[in-house]
Amino acid sequence: MDFVAGCVGGAAGVLVGHPFDTVKVRLQVQSIDKPLYRGTFHCFQSIIRQESLTGLYKGIGSPMMGLTFINAIVFGVQGNTMRQLAHDTPMNQFLAGAAAGAIQCVICCPMELAKTRMQMQGTGEKKPSRKLYKNSLDCLVRIYNREGLRGVNRGMVTTLIRETPGFGVYFLAYDVLTRSIGFEPNDRFMIPKLLFAGGMAGIASWLSTYPVDVIKSRLQADGVGGVNQYSGIADCVRQSVRREGYMVFTRGLTSTLLRAFPVNAATFATVTLILMYARGEGEGPKDCEEVQPSHLAPIQQQTQPSSL
Image 1: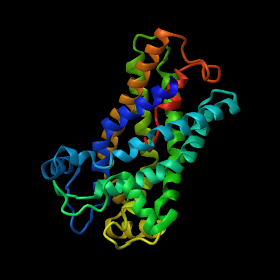
Image 2: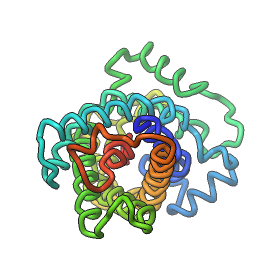
Image 3: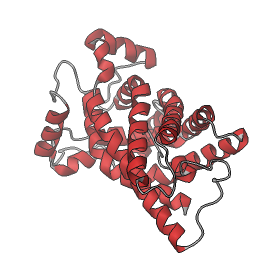
Image 4: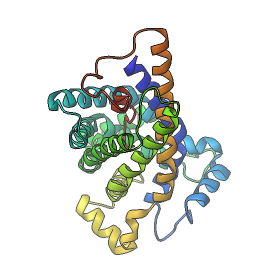
């Protein structure tokens, strides 16, 4: 039931947060010479006006497809790492989260590559005149046929740099917050506290690694028109800073932070309600509670399946 709750909660998070993610990616990779959008809200308005509401959900198939596998990896690695570390401390939460974040990159990187390519497809068109990819799976297959495994794993290093500390900060922040606000399973304010702790932990995680995410998005979107602009991470950083200054690393940050809180809120609320229902019907989850007796540990271990 824990795993099912984590998957459903993650799906709720994707549905709530994907429009914000589309805006984030569009802002991160748009040309500085011919910008299409003036800011977050203008980008929202433009996508809806030019591409209809469905434009905000472009590329959602990829995170939905990878959700189950990412949940399995994060849940297994984080839980087993905590059991090996034996003590429920903030530092151990960081280490366990970092381990989970690093290993799930195997699924996360190709998934986000397909998502980014699909989000960029048909920019500004309600009905794209020419579709490069039919769907997320077709996108990955085409990339593999052209570029092999290296192409499918484009942006892997930046994904690893982002996800490893990102997940560590997420679990650390959530643990510190739940300890600070005095969370108990029978607390009548349990869900509001979970929503607050999860949302703020998500924001903290994104703030800690956001500049890396900008570079990752640019590398994964590079080559869509057939021409590669960057030769690697260092070249992407160099060109971006030279042309746009250091503020380039905050591109799309507003939409990301607007997304972070409701995504984590939706995820935590969904997981909590499912686990509460399961406990009312039968025996509650016990396997992880011996390692993490407080803060509803099973919820903490599963609720953040991908890039926060």
